Image (cartoon, rainbow, N blue to C red; front, side, top):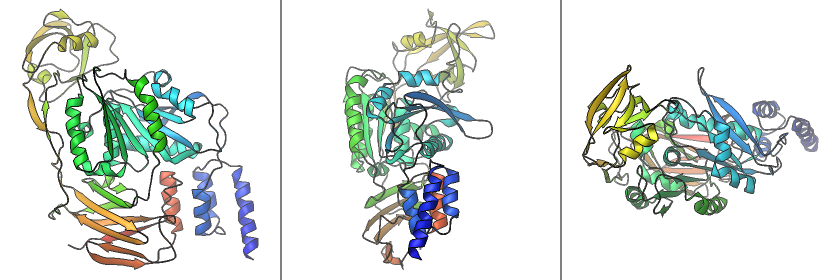
Length: 508
């Protein structure tokens, strides 16, 4: 009888194979066949390799993720010439700079064609994705993070992506966004490669705290330059040193004599790509530290914070890591309209408490001169600004409703500020496991969850969990078929195919 059932399963899988790709329909069809046991279903899903070969390779595909009823976020996928659907393929996510704009990039395919990473993706037969972001889908807001995650999941349903070899990188805002993913949502990625970014930008913009000890859970390879007018290496170095004090898994590199440009790409990218080749995601790390103030960012691999209790006193080991930075940047404090083609620089947004606000600049003003010198475009205006330092006075000549107006301003004096924002209280968890034994310590957390995987533990013997010094769980845990399938449908991750979830309440 057992052989008969095995034969039925094999015939079913062979017939299903013609459907190809691990999409929702295939997953549901497999799940609905009750002849397939939970153990067998886990094996089929986690080892799935049956993807269809695309009709064309060596192509750029413009896709869209429907974020909501009114917003579709574009992204470009490059499929290398050597892509083979029978082989697991690494994936690079490249986040562009200048994400805080009203509109998406107007020529996304041309942008992807010219990007340095396309050449290396082609050489190594890796897939590379270029998400297009804007104000609504910035790399550090929850909508933006979910947008990137949705793109990854869609790709996993169509292509044989190596779940354990997905890398995220980017320049400027893209580098800052890479840091923000590492600090808040690392699960999908093997490693992070921020280029000329700033670790704290996402936190500053969103006012959501970030926690440096979270960087110990993944490899971070960061690069900055000394003449960068936005994020100079001198300032970034202080945050990198602080991160190392928090036990971050960090490699930091500097290039000197270079501003906020990627002119070091030809030297650095071969090294960076070689580094990627050595980084494979480990979803079963023996130790995890995770801290968050938002439940949406509560999960790291097999550990999840599901309830925070900020009324508790934090444990001594839950430390705040911070440093005072000096703000020496000379900034007007406005966003310009990148679509504007006329003379001068058109303003789209005024930043609060900025030089622009203090001098009375308004949205839709067009700046045509600085200190009575013509500024024919935003580039020329930035060039004129580069001659100034903090505390200097200046004038801007603007067009407002066709009238020419001169405004008087002053760049603020240099000031010190906390690099990291800790205004919201957080909960933290220290956890480790060996064999079937888990040891958990919590701080300002009232509930956690532990995710279970058949390749992580021995499913035939009890799982023993000690929580804050007390044994709270000692049971054999079975595969939960419904949970396993729901997990796969949500994440399309064949390797992090969690089969059960244990909730634990923390006694006060």
